[in-house]
Amino acid sequence: MTTAADAGLPDDPTSSGSAQDAATTVQLSAAPDRDAAARRAEDLFIDSFGYRPDGVWSAPGRVNIIGEHVDYQDGLCVPMAISHRCFAAAARTPTDRLRVRSAQSETVLDIDARDLAPGRVEGWPAYVAGVLWALRPHISGSTTQGMDIMIDGQVPLGAGLSSSAALECAVAEAIESLLSLSTSPLQRVQAAITAETDFAGASTGGLDQSASVLSRSGHALFLDCRDFSTRPVPWDLAGQDLALLITDTRAEHSHVDGEYTARRADSEQAARDLGVGTLRDVDPSALEEVLPTITDEVVRRRARHVITEIERVRAFDSLLASGTVREHVAELGALLDASHDSLRDDYEVTVDQLDVAVEAARGAGAHGARMTGGGFGGSTIAMVEAGEAQQVASAIAGAFAARGFAAPEFFLALPSEGAGQDR
Ligand code: ADP
Ligand code: MG
Image 1 (cartoon, rainbow, N blue to C red):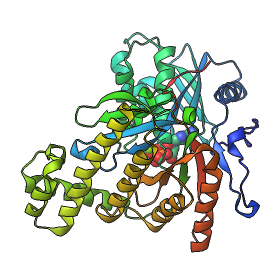
Image 2 (image 1 turned 45 degrees about the vertical axis):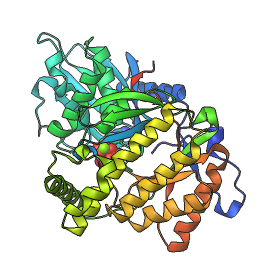
Image 3 (image 1 turned 180 degrees about the vertical axis):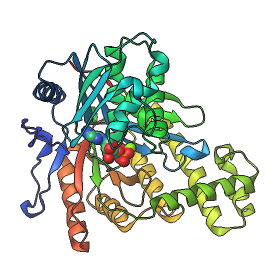
Image 4 (image 1 turned 90 degrees about the vertical axis):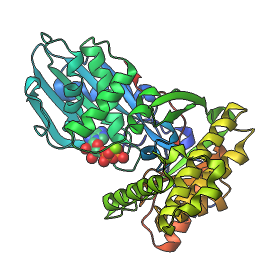
């Protein structure tokens, strides 16, 4: 994680608010200034490769605002790009060598780009090499594919804020420019997904890459997981003195994959019981009549989460279409709260740290708070008054200390611009 301090950059003024109680003052990490961060990536490239790069490209991490555990049931969700980005300083070389380095890792890659194939590249460089490999159908056969790439990321790794998509999408932008391709943003989203699933061998649903490429500043992204169509929705937090406080609870759970598989199986069972292709097809107004037809009590609760969560996304979207965030702040917050409670009680994917962070945020004045991401650890979000972020973070830190949990980490996020060129 790169903070303003260790990047040698001036602290963002929002990153060190004055807490009421100095004893519980916590560090809120706002992303370092984008221009300065891009210059830093360029300098790192020069230090590492000994010459000036052709350009610097970047892509943001993301957080899902609402619509959790509904993607595999053709659901709806509303992610937004966060302020923390991954930067790729890069240059084309007159060879076929692909050389890749990162300020966040000792592991380097130096390979003939023509030899790229799934399984050939280990560790983090697979996410980068995978993007070049996935873009091949768009590269003419006579084009040399050699390039040098220096990565510098601000998105914390493995905190559920999608450092992997930020990395892939920054690289996709760089390759698009360096090799003068003419891919569409959607094709770059697809290349990033293919890189992660088929080349790096990780599993990803596509929400992360869509948000990282397609997001617009001051907006969230409405994403329909049935056909992957998207549209920006107004979500101007900064203009209304609001902010999103992200808490990385740093809680880890050892059987997450098995739990995810079980939840998917439960929701597939529910769809079969209800005679629909996916739970998206259930009319939410008929919920009370149809739910009793599911005999298994656990499966019934799983279905209730998915069906009501999709309905909450619709309600969230309608509110944002009919007024500002400020005008609807209480109702929007209530939807965030209801989403968390459903994930805790019906879907059972929270852990103590997630519940404690959410409760503490609500108690300290957040308009709404919920876990975000797959659950069983990871992060929470709280919609707060911009001037109260510090006090809410302090309350969460205090609640964690009182329970003997490891100290959480805090990030301030504003809805940011998707992938693009910086320099
Ligand atoms: P998340 O995407 O939620 O942060 P993942 O496990 O999907 O978590 O992706 C994290 C992985 O992405 C890291 O373990 C590393 O392999 C790779 N990664 C992301 N950012 C960087 C970076 N700046 N430098 C090197 N590797 C990175
Ligand atoms: Mg990831």
